[in-house]
Image 1 (cartoon, helix red, strand yellow):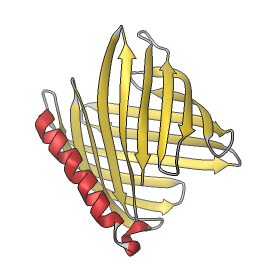
Image 2 (cartoon, helix red, strand yellow):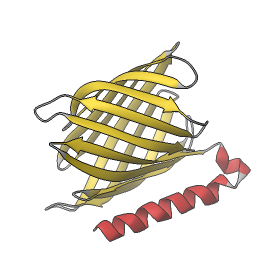
Image 3 (cartoon, helix red, strand yellow):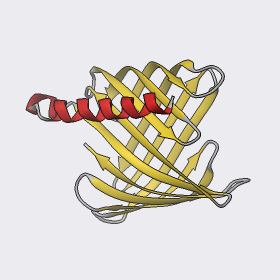
Image 4 (cartoon, helix red, strand yellow):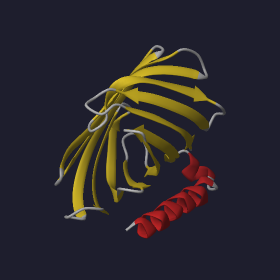
Length: 190
């Protein structure tokens, strides 16, 4: 399954770069490639994630999300609708490691800036259950952001991000739960 995930990530990045060369598509294609390392219980687990969305406000679009690590891999592709700038909904089919590898999933993303403050919420519902990530942040200036992040299976804690260039950023997060964790990584956005 991990080999399939690596191929999927490479294909998704290739598609993003190909579409990114088309000036008409540049305004429609958005996404990221992220490498992060989760440190918990004295063990470091690196993982790679990518998300590519094609579409815009008020338009039906498409997206693919892939994630792979030593212990878990998943890939989902589907359709999205963004009826408002702050709202995106989607449905997808995909596969992940586990007893029931083939899944259907739906998601709701909301996000809205209020001055230098922002809130983002992501709820994913699949056969295996619900997953969420909530981020409440403050943009200190054009380079630095501090946030409070809460994610299922990780817990809640502070997060900091530093924008290195318009597309590249570094981030670190500490989550407190039964098993606290420290996460750090880099993200390339397009």
